[in-house]
Length: 419
Image 1 (cartoon, rainbow, N blue to C red):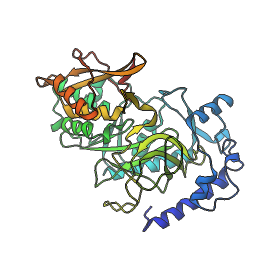
Image 2: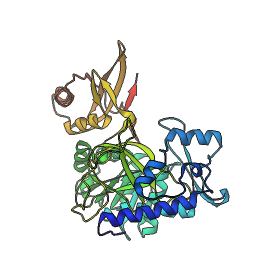
Image 3: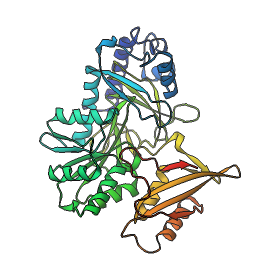
Image 4: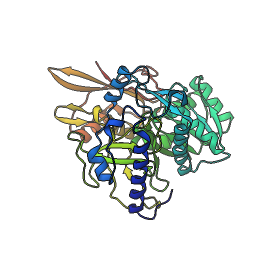
């Protein structure tokens, strides 16, 4: 939907919030008591409606097994089941109706069209196709757009690579980590990716697509392909798409989400342009909504206004910068995994890495293990030590691992471990 100015967009969001409120009360047991009798303005909505947290949703599913009470429709109307990975605790189970599923497919279509993907394109999905929402919504949306959707579930990485090449797919969808892994397999198998058909690599699931060092690595591994980032969550559905003009800038779909930026500690709203935690209300997933959901994602919003691509949607330079709960303090320095990722990938010559956190005399310390690539330059460890010291003012010990010894990841990477 196109808006000529932000006032019109905000009026539209208010109208959608009022419609959402009317649909949820009294049908949705989880949210009925949280909503006011009327919503006079967006500001009034934010002031009156409490945050929703993942821990509350988990507790609700424990209290009302197996799916909780956050449902607006009769149970017989729900046809789709997904769940979160459970990497930060008990998995969340999520149900959707045909209508709420279709809303998410519309959101995914925005991701595809902003990436220049449409009818007739061949899209390869390098996913395991487990119970995770992003896999299925992406696939179904591509089918509905008229793409040739090629599933890559139940395959080894070598078999996935061969199918990708043989089908002459122009688009690859996977996590940034797995795009790196497939390129590694291509090198092992003697496959020249530059001679292949892939021209778009759409990534999500972790911040790598908007991390400059990781993005540069992906561009070098997939010659001629544009890397396109986006993000979403099981609880919200697809949320953002990459600006077609400005790489590493994500736009929130504000006609489908009411977005707020708050102080992660106090929860208080922040001034335009101030970095903080992204809070989301999905405006169209009426059957299974989240209202003022604390995503835990740290973002740096651009000043309000029209982007050079023409969009009025909230712009996030650098995409999702980090997770609020991912930060570690090392000798008084705040360190996020994405910052380490940027330095490691920018250094070059590293096939894989692992970060170990250990308590030493009641203080956390970091140690890196790196697996040098076959073409790694001499002095790699010294170069990385210097880059880390320059970036963080810390000496971080580095150990080398033998080729192929560090884990590879098909989905979200788990490179940070506490030992």
